[in-house]
Image 1 (tube, rainbow, N blue to C red):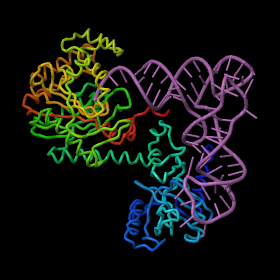
Image 2: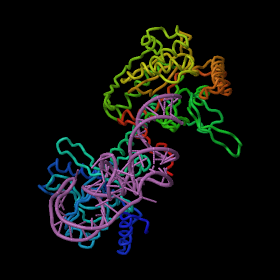
Image 3: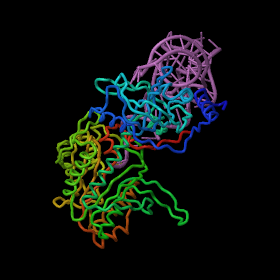
Image 4: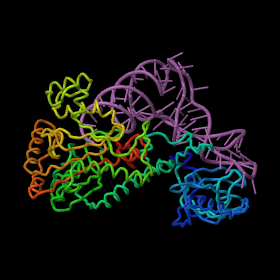
Length: 508
RNA sequence: GCCCCGCUAGCUCAACUGGUAGAGCAACUGACUCUUAAUCAGUAGGUUCGGGGUUCGAGUCCCUGGCGGGGCACCA
């Protein structure tokens, strides 16, 4: 105990003092009658119905939560107790709860969990408050939470935080403390859950079947990315954490499951950024007898459904932008828009000419990039920064899309789209390649790139080709970056703000 | 992996060209029976991220390591 600093030591001493008084500081259970928000709502309803005399008391109720503020006035105290989605003021008065119980309030701290029971009333300053008749300590907090003080602007209703908990490193490392002191953050994750629920309900109502496919795979595929590698000991087998669900889900189409989807964690062994976490949530779905045009329409309906369910409006503020989700979203051809920007048809430009264009724009390190990669880079630099409103970029070069079906009117292209929102790629879909001979040829082209040193090129998946030989119906499929979509809806600047425990280096 | 920035009390931050490490909040003691960033008086609290160096003297300058943020690269 000598090595504990003063703040921690004082709380241990209070713990001992409580036990000496016969109070168990870590209770086993407590059954609150209401949540704080319900207490306030029902008191206000009582007032609205005129059932309350001036200054009268409402029903007795009990709540359970964490002490988040405390104001000591001698023979009375005011505190706020917060539960999951709100908080309520508690009025402790010496003559109401008795001398002994009142004295024991001195052994409570900010951060303690308590249960409080009593009638509701409105204070002179107008706040709905529980007049404590009794209280129960539920859990003693032995480490002070980094509460900031909050000030409510009575006119605007906005909250200002003073000297709060701001260090990003500590917030991510100690997410429990971050959540405990930031009610708005709890709301972000509530919204995340609602979004995923709305995506699920939409696909369910469209007749899709939710399935689960392997996370541990002997062969990875479905995207261009480096995998995490692991080991299965009993089988003596090197295995990979999935980088995508695609190839397994499409096998299910061969098997006759005509509409399937999966919400999953995927893993890509790459750098971190504002929009990248190595472990992230992906939604993929596949629908038989549809093509990429049908899927763009489906995405528009799906996004609309989610916004209606979660926000009940079709406009979202994201940073400095206001994004409108009114369909239809514009469709712009990748090759055409890039050709316009460059002033020349990109199909007429040789690799070397593209590299020159890239150099002029100041793009770095493109010496080893092939034609497809150069196109991708130039698009990112020239077009992407303008794609604030939802926009489908369509018809990607074949070289960039080894799993997408050739375009019905241009063999150099595929029927593929990516939906950009807020300058970030959020959906990626195509008419799925179901010609097994073409698929094998594309895999072999990838293998060639791989031998040339591209360690993100895809591997040949013979079993997948065998499945296609049995026959996969014409199919449209889409992958969606769920975390990024949640960022947009909840107006968070970093993917770390929508993932509860983002990847960090170990502390020591 | 590269570039830039940051790391000081439990939390948020100060500390000029190198010269006794401070404040607000939280904590502790006391006053106060409708307060709400409560108020008032007082007290305590530090390995300045770790290691090394320069100097009479380092939070400050130099080297090195760690962690984080932003950007680049890679990717969704």
